[in-house]
Length: 184
Image 1 (spheres, rainbow, N blue to C red):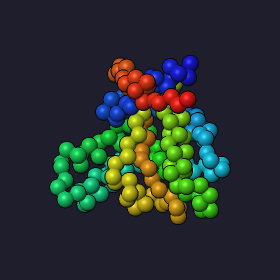
Image 2 (image 1 turned 180 degrees about the horizontal axis):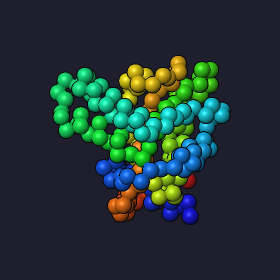
Image 3 (image 1 turned 90 degrees about the vertical axis):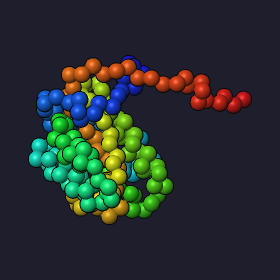
């Protein structure tokens, strides 16, 4: 069962979402799945902020304005997309990582643990029939201007979620044999 779930996980983008809302209980279940990710020395570095409704619109406007402010050659279509995509989602979860103040593990391990938490969310969404997508725009470095962040906390991206009426395409991978060396 888990192997099929892993193989069926896909990126489903905001343009593909319909207007069906995502219940708070479903979002809580997805976040609980995240909370069971592996974590070295039990630092549990993942932190999340759930955006729905008006906060999604505010995020889109913030991202668009930051883009226009910081890009030397901004494109109108990109500024518009930054405004529209958050509004299309049933919910957005800001993916953050809280660095262990004792720095008991290397930072990359905490980023990896947070990524594993997101993979758990993604697999849970796949199982629940919710499309999802992890976006990591360069603008995430400005998120401390959008919401309060703790010392040592960094935003790693946004997890967009929404239902879709579109068929999800089958995935493709090159053979694993091309990526493995067996050592005797």
